[in-house]
Image (cartoon, rainbow, N blue to C red; front, side, top):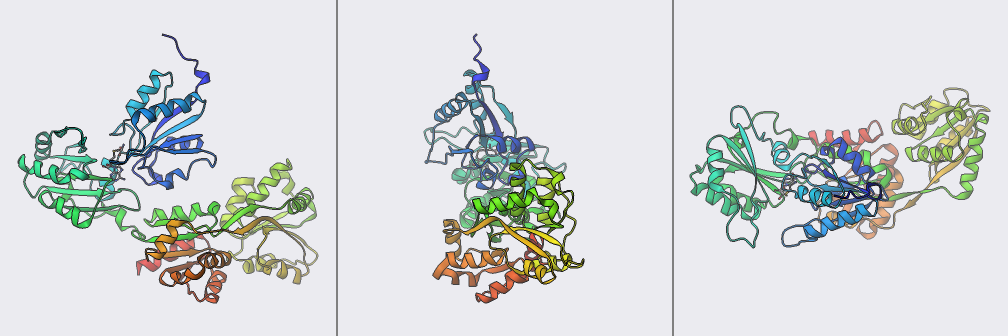
Length: 517
Ligand code: SAH
C-alpha cells in the first residue's frame, strides 16, 4: 500500500455540535470550530453556533431536510476530500453526535480510504439532551434501566419499516426507555404499531421539539393520545419521541430549563455586532430568543485621527491620565499599541481611568493593564466626578473615545482647569438597514423586548424603522441607563425597565426582575 504524502493534505475534523445551544458543544469541538478555515455543516446546526467561526471562514451548508435534499452523501464526501486536498483545515460539523444517526462513520471511512484521517469529536446526542431539557431523565434507577436510540425514519423508497416495533414494545414493557429520532412524519404509524404489539395505551410518551434551543417545545401524555396531541399543538421535526416510564416522572428540579427567567421571550438587541455577544449570551442563558439588530457599525478611525493617536501614544509620559470609555476604544488602542511596537512600559507613568467594568476587563485582556479608576456609576458624569475628586487644574488628560461621544466628560474636565486631548479612536456609523428577521418579527408583533444600550442606538433604530417606528410602541423597552432613557422619552417611547448599574448585567437583571413580578 502506498501512503499518501500527508503534508500535502489539509485536515478534517468531524465535530459533534451537540443539540443546539452553543454552550453544549465540547470544549475541543469549540476550539476546532473557532480555528477552522472551512465549516461544512448540517441544517440542524444553529446560526448561534456558526457565529463562533472565524470571520474569514467559509461556511458550507449541506443540510438536508426531507424531500429537500440539498446535497447527496456522495457529494458531501467528495466536498470534504476536495477541501482537505486543497490543504485547508475543515471542520465537518454535525448536529448532536456525529456517529448517532449522523452518517459520520461513512464520511470518516471515505476520507481515510483517500488518505485523510480525521479527528472525531463526539457531541451530546439529541436523544439524551432534548428529553433532559424537557425534564425527562432517560434512565432513572426506579423507572428505567436501559435506553434505546432508534431511527423512525422510513426511506420512502422502502416498502416496510426498518425499525422492529415488536422488539421496541418489549423493551419498553421490561422497563426500558426508547428515544426515536426522525420519527415525526411517521408518528401515527409508530404509536399505532406499538399499541398493536401490546403496549398499554397509558404508557407514558413525550415529544420534544428543538430540544436545548430557544425554540424548544414539548408535551407529555400517553401513547394513545400522543399523535393527536402533537397535531393539535403543531409540534414538528426536529423532535425526539420518548416512550417509557421515565416520561411520567415529575419531580422538582428536573424541569429547570423551561423555568428559566426568560423562556419564551423574544428579545431584539440593538448593538454593534462586535459588542453583541456578551448581551446575547446572558439573555440566551436565561432562555430568551435573541434577534440582533445592529444599528451602528464600528469602523476604524480615519488616517488623520490615527496619526494624532499615534503621536499621543508615543508621548504618553506627557499625560497624567489616560481615559477610555468603551471596549471598542480599548480594541482600537490595543491595535495602535501593537502597530507602534509599544508595550506595557509605555503606560508606566500614566494613570488609567475606565468608564465601566467591561472597558476595564477589555484593558486587562487585550493590554494587560489595570484601570486605576472606575467610577461608581458607569456614565460620563460619574466618571468626571471621580476624576475630579483630585485637583484637575493643569493636569493633562488623554481621552480615547468614539467620534460621536458626548461632550460632557471633556467639558467637565476643562471647566475644572484640566488640559484635555479628546481623540476619536473609532468611528460609529449608522447601519443601512435592519435585518429581515427582525423586521418580520416586529411586524408580526412577535417581539417581546428591545434593548437599547446607548442614545445613538435609539436614534439609529428609529431612523432605520422610518415610518414603521410606531411598531416599537407595542414592545417592552429595556434601557441601559438614565441618558438612554431620556433619549427614548424625547422620541415618545418610554423605557419599561432601566438597568442599574448601567451595564450589560444590569440590563439583563432588569428584564429578568420585571418578568419575575
Ligand atoms: N446526530 C444527531 C441526530 C441526527 S438525526 C444527534 O446525535 O442528535 C436528526 C434527528 O435528530 C432529528 O430528526 C431529531 O429526531 C433529532 N434531533 C436533532 N436535534 C434535535 C433537537 N435539538 N431536539 C430534538 N430532536 C433533535
